Image (tube, rainbow, N blue to C red; front, side):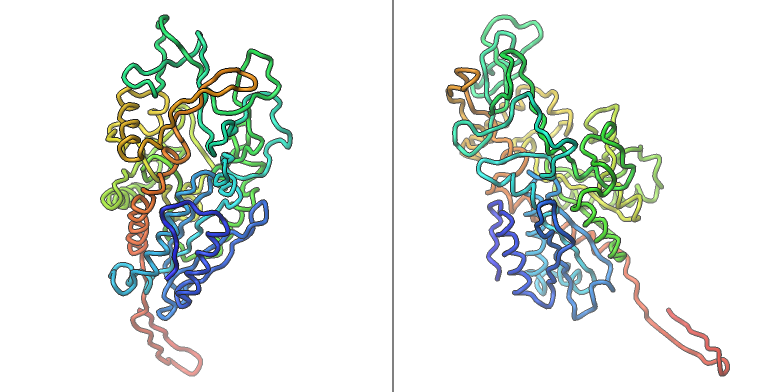
Length: 458
């Protein structure tokens, strides 16, 4: 049996060995192939999984899953690995898995963006949005603060710098936390919060975030309602300009038996459904009803609410996103597709009534206290790092600490990983079994004359 760790985040070579192990252990079910190469030349692996004794993959209704299109969303890859494990190890003991492998096909791409994930899993990590390809310019941004691990602890955290004009103050209830300064507060010590890093070409006064030159967002590069860079940041020079997205689009179009899809992302603990750029009233009511039924089961099985991209998950109330996977699958391929955002630290901490995007702009101080108590109780304090003095080469005395955002917020801490993603795969299997399956029950040929016959198929 393949020994795949579901309590750690694995890099590309270990991922490759794991997929090869499933192929070797289950040769009658697992086919390992590639849909293309990444920008840096890595194979983008695809696992085709079905019981070939009951029919070829192309003859059965199929379900597509991909993950890790965004570089640092590495738990998405684990979700698909755990689904592969479920399908391979529960055949014969789990009736749904058995029926699914006998009658359906699964096309599974664990890591659509292997280059960006490698950067995210380095020590210290290099965090970008998607591809490692420079875009829209080859040159580095001349000014600004670049995120770097300055104290050598393998993490990129935050710096707090005393500043009488700073927008932050220490939380009175827990001095480890930083909370927003009130607009009329004048008494006390205030701070500026910055990413841990170094300033490029600093003039001694102005501090801004340095734009990374790897500015692509590959989940804006799909053909559906694609827009130019000045309208949709990171969308690329044209639809499917990026080899990873071109490979995915080609692979899906070459497999017309695909009738359902989930792309795994992080984070928020929600299942997102199309459309992203128009209200629900603009799609057929029958499609909306179907999405709602699938989503109800998703919430029942995973605990994740199913919500609308347009109505409940917009980054700005006056803007919409375009060129995304689930819109393309629904609008161009006629497939019920979902974007599942893995993990909600807020929900883990007992915060339930909150807006997924708006929370990061404004939330009650009590939420911060719940989160740090959760970190203390469940993560042994590792989710939030205590502030420590550090002599910054440009800013002088600062303190480094704060939330370990990569593995407390953006991804589950490793010990939570398997329990978080296992139900997601179960929902995928359930959705696959909802797909229509045509069967020929009778074929009859009746000769009418020497050159004509009546064929009856039922």
